[in-house]
Picture 1: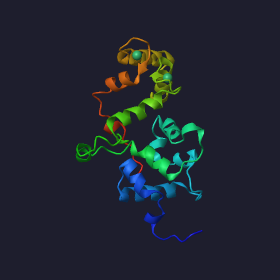
Picture 2 (picture 1 turned 30 degrees about the horizontal axis):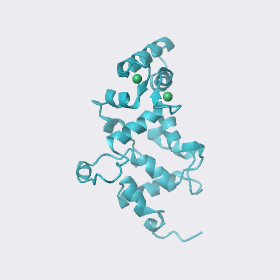
Picture 3 (picture 1 turned 90 degrees about the vertical axis):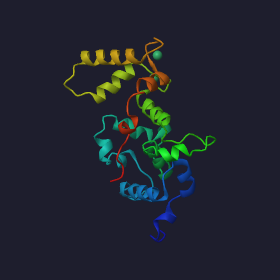
Picture 4 (picture 1 turned 45 degrees about the horizontal axis):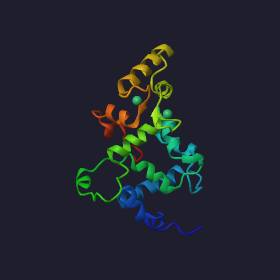
Length: 196
Ligand SMILES: [Ca+2]
Ligand SMILES: [Ca+2]
């Protein structure tokens, strides 16, 4: 294989990734090092097993579902651009950058709306655009400790759906989801430490 010279030169598509994700070149370089460290056997891509080494994901109750979102459409291999695109959702919003944004440019991956979309799809397992009572229950089962009975869980799921469900169809649409989280600090909720 080639020489192990400068890291920066070996990052694939570094300029387009910078534009697409908003990460600086220095951050991309650090993420690339992290990517390579997670790829213990030097395959050139990451598997689910590799991502399970990330401590923050291992302890996150929805960690498995977050890992799923790195592997859309049933793929088994995660390349560096795919890795960075998902992580970009967790990048903190830079207010100055937000103010200077060209409105013709596509919405950055780390905007509040895109963060909410990312969170929403962790719940909406069948991707029909709504969180059903059953999907809410499944998510709660992961998030709530074992000391809670099934009956209690069902009543929490009912209540959570009812509180957000404005049009009364028994499920939570994306807009209802976004509205119910309006006052929540999604920034903080969605910060996952990937870099040490
Ligand atoms: Ca659904
Ligand atoms: Ca609804």
